Length: 329
Length: 283
Image 1 (cartoon, each protein chain N blue to C red):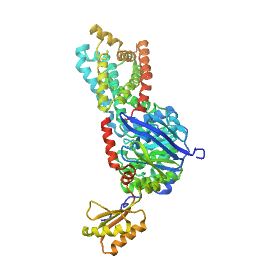
Image 2: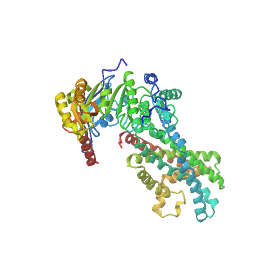
Image 3: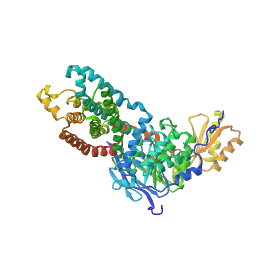
Image 4: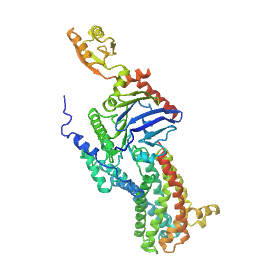
């Protein structure tokens, strides 16, 4: 791995239009070799199109991209020898068994028959798919399919891995398993470009994040920089007795400054980055006889990030993208 | 209320150590050769048949029906007796049945395109036409099955070719080879149409008239002049003539030459076109 250039992925002004819709409208990305980089944005922001261009599946209309120094258009074949893609649709063959999928890919990547079989067994066992190995993939659960998908991406360890929303639609347990695998891959030195809709996910895994909206990068930085730019986390409090909300509002405002009343008549929230101060605010309520049903300190959601960065929510952005797509179709 | 999520199931990701080991595993092997990649895709086609054997109905039951129907319905009317007609029609039915089957190679490709796995295939560092050549290699096995079924049914009905086993085998090979080449056309259609049904309709709209406007069923000299001319230059007629010749043991080598020529031309034109479409088409 020592011979690799310092930059695994460089994108300069990538543009891709479908009909009248500019799905990607001048995206720049710089990803250091060996790092995990998150591309964060709502549905239709242009994440998948960007990843498909970098993975040589789409030719950019303008701009350029390099993977480990190789041009994604002129040296597409070399790039294909360095990458693997785990697409948004599970990129495995549903009509084959899990084991057959992995042997198929091993053979296509140049492993000899016996080596491909051994590699399939090793990966199936490591990813907890040993028992399901002889079952057709169409009968797999979402989490199993995702794990097989990632296993298929590392039959031969790629230098750069593209993961397009690897945990969308998974239950929390499966999601944690996928995160563990991504961390292990990163520890082993693979560069990972991770597209996601969840700030939480990017925060957990990525060293750098680009926030993308309407085909453009609208913010970039480390997760903590990004969260700092948004402001803070939020303290969520729900009371046992809605009658006490006015008093709670007064007390929390005294501790934390700003308070927001939720549509739920027993709930209120306040921006707060510091867990100690949040704890104090909660303690103050309890001391003064305000009874609390539950409370939590959450990170800002993708929606809050979006609201702060763009003045509109991620939901609105996704709806707009849908409408544009419909118009284009 | 609380159910332990892990009951009865070992922790799904076996253990971190195994994952680490599997991940940090291997040096990249040499790239697969073109032939090896294509054969691997052929193996994929065979696996699908293994998992869903019903897929073989169109290359087993349908040809049997064709042989029985055409022999007994048209035999007396066209050739005077079913036995005499069998000598004429059997190589023709072989050609027709196998060529009808080629439409399905386009349908299968179109179906494949709607699946995420194609994206993975397209990002693999392999010989570009490999997925397509491989699929057609798998299909060729189906064509061969259809051919063998037809000849076997013919033999049961009393067909005794003068060309012997050798002649029959050569005819089978020639028909499969031509079908392989013609399949490129249907793969192209498969990449251009929006749904598997559309591919099926377009495919049969093409192959149906082309097959009936040949000498597969009747000698062309009873036809109107313009039609007769078309039937005589139709490559499917020439393929049927060559197959009859091989099976009867008196083949006209120029027929075989023309069949090869057309097969090569179809492949040279449609293989690069199909390969290009396969790489660029986004669903």
